[in-house]
Every structure is written in structure tokens, then in C-alpha cells.
Length: 287
Image (tube, rainbow, N blue to C red):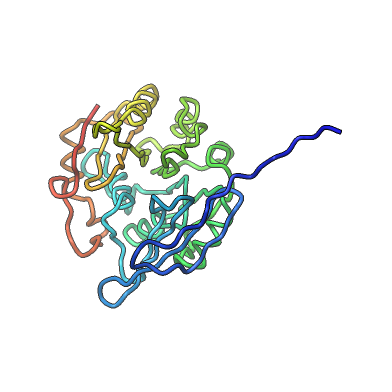
């Protein structure tokens, strides 16, 4: 009697990083999930969401902080890749996040821009449960959709001012979120002044040189759909932010807006500081 055997791939659990306490771990259908915690400033505690091998931080939460100095903070700048003047209070209508994880971007957008409607798409229901339990992901303006990101967006009838994509983690890059057809669908769901902002990882080769092939390939695909594209290398990381706009932008207009408004939207300051392109951005390249 013949048969077919399926062997499930598993990640061997390891100890939490040094100085951190493991609060929770679980194998889901998609990931090995860990929540770790460490003491932070002002007698507070910070929690991190780690997945699989634990090499990347997928969400961060602290009840006393908004700004973490990480990749998610750059998503706040996306609405201001628009001609001056730009009023978030009047023009930021709705946000979509593909790769919600435990809700860091949704938390930051709510804190900075107010109760803007957010559709957060996450394929893993156990991560959603983890976000609600350990990361304060209970914002009333956040509509959580547990589904594949491409399918959920395709089925949506909404138009978005910002579509944020935080679903690429080398080597776990969902190919269906990298195609020309997907980015055409994203643009079809943008408002006239809409922006798509994407977190893309890069690596270092054995010779010490950065491997930017994924970034270059993504930029090439975006260029077939969007008139203006920007790349932002996040300092101190292996992450690059790609920003593509529904309308053609002039470099000077966008750069001025970015310097003036990043981190101080709606009178709020991320971490109590004003962040400018000169202080925060490693490199801005306009295509």
C-alpha cells in the first residue's frame, strides 16, 4: 500500500535574547511566535514580537512610548509625500496596513493622526490574538482583517490615502505581494493623492557588500505603475523604505515637506523630538 507522507517544518525554540524575559511562545500554522519583554527607561517595559528564528523584530510596544527609532516610524512620513501644503486632518482619509503583525504601525498612526480609519490585514490569526493580548492592539479605529494580504485588498471596496506594506522579511518574502499585478491593484485602491509605503529588507554578502537586488527589483516593478518613487535607507538597519505616489511629485516639494513635517504631525512629536530628513534619513533617492 503506497502513501504520501507530509513532514511539517518546525522552528526549534531557543532562549530569549540576553536581558529579555519570555512572556509567551506558540507555534501557529504560519509562524513560531515569541513575545519577549525587557526593562526600559522611566521604569517602563518594552515588548517585542519575534517570529521563527527570532532574527527580526516584527512589532514593538511600550505603554509610555510611541517612537522606537525603528523602521515603523518612517511609515508616519508617507502622507507627506505630497505637494505642500498637505493637511493630514483634511486629506488623510483611510489607511490600509498589509502585514499588521501586532499593530505597531496602527498604534503609531492612531497616536499621531488621531482616529483615522485603519484596515489592518494579517494572515496569521495567532499573531492577531498575540497583538491584542500583549501589544495593546485594541484601537477602536482599527478594523482587523485576517486574510491573505493580496486577496483582502482585492476584495476591498475602499480607497486609501496610504497603503503600508510590512510583509517582507528575507527569506520570507511572499511572492504574490511583489508582482506587477499586485501593485496595479494597490494603485487602484489609492485616492488621487494616495501613497504606498513598503518596508523591504536587504542583506550583506560574504564579501561585506550590501545585496540590494530585492530593493532594485521592487523599484523596477513599482516604476511600471507609479510616477514617483523614493527609497529611504533606514540608518542602523538592513531595511529600506520604498515610497511610491499616485501623482507625479517634484523632488524639492516632497523633500521640503518631509523635513518639516515628519514626526510633528497634528501637533504630536514622536518621542518628544522633531525629526528632520537630515537627522533621520540615511539616504533619500528620487527616481
